[in-house]
Image 1 (tube, helix red, strand yellow):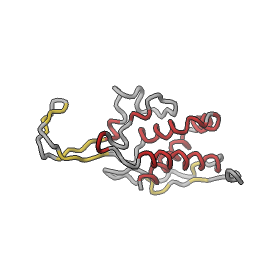
Image 2 (cartoon, rainbow, N blue to C red; image 1 turned 30 degrees about the horizontal axis):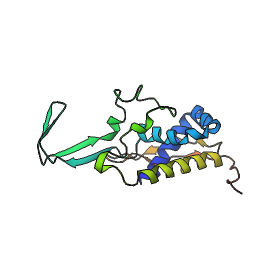
Image 3 (cartoon, rainbow, N blue to C red; image 1 turned 90 degrees about the horizontal axis):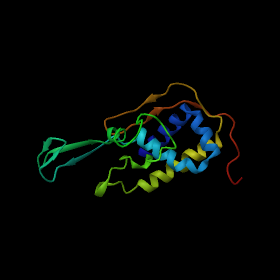
Length: 166
C-alpha cells in the first residue's frame, strides 16, 4: 500500500506542477531527487510509534520509560529549520533526501531502497509512456492517521508513446 500511495501522490503532485514535468523531461537525472521531494512533502507514511526505553526529556517534555510515543514524520518533513520554504514542492531541493519518511536509526525502513527504486521507475515510466496525462477530476483522498494516499485519482492518459525498447 505504501508504494501505491507513493506513486499516486507523485502522479498527482507532478500533474499539478507541469513545470516540474517539463524539467524532468529535459533533465531526467533529477528523477531520484524528485522522488525524494515527493516522499518528503507527501509521504505515504505519516507517523511512527515507539515505546520509550528510558526516561528522557525532549524539548522540555518529560517522557517516562514505557510510555507510548508517536512521532509525526510528516511534520518533521516540513521543519523550517531543516527545509527552506518547507511547504513548496521543489524537485531541485538540495536536501530533499533529509526527510524522515522511512524513519531513522535502527528503525529505518529496510525496504527504503526498493521503495525509492519503484517510485523512480514507476513515475518516470508513467510520464514517459503518457506524456499527455491530465487530471480528469478532483479525486478523493484516503488518508488515515498512519497512511496517506488516493482512493480515486481520475486521469485522462492521452495517446501512449511506444514502450521503451519496443
